[in-house]
Image (cartoon, rainbow, N blue to C red; front, side, top):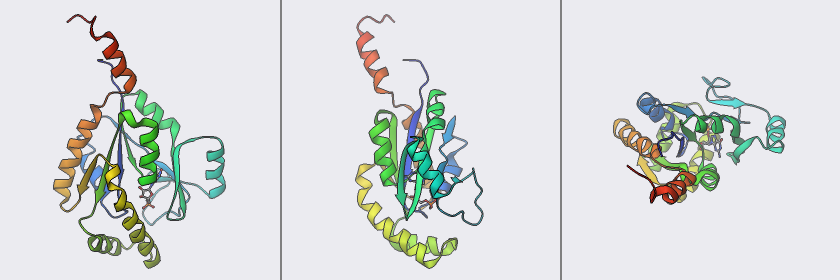
Length: 208
Ligand code: 5GP
């Protein structure tokens, strides 16, 4: 049981919940990790860089990747496609890293179905809907129409919080970051099912 194994930490929550700020705050304390960069068809926002926040592609390229089975999961969110590429995730897990995902509720459900035994999931929420509205309005990266769409999505997503292992209410960034760090440490302790079965199988005959 001493072999290193990777684990998965899924973070979901409405845009504006503070997921990126929280990841930035804990990234130096969680050990070796890989942040899964998704591919999306949504237009690049001001301040974003291709290959950093996302790989930005057009719909034809995204659909080609779907056909070629390149995605671990993908979903249509706010009218744009978002997907997680399988290859880098597989490699990071083989290297024993903690793989972080910032994906929506559909993505969490797909990842949990495929990698449930090594997955821990956290839903990050602003304290109230009106606080979310303030944050989205103040960051002024989206049009009013986009903000309204995100708020509508948030109302739907919050209904599915019970599908997650943990809920973090991001009222104070400091407190939320401490909670997320604890969860990240615990996530690493999850053992893949085949290792558990192997341990149980050999346990009776193991010597100290
Ligand atoms: P945004 O456009 O604000 O960056 O992200 C919109 C939503 O898409 C967020 O809820 C985010 O978690 C989700 N998302 C980002 N990447 C992926 C992905 O690869 N798969 C899925 N299912 N959702 C994603």
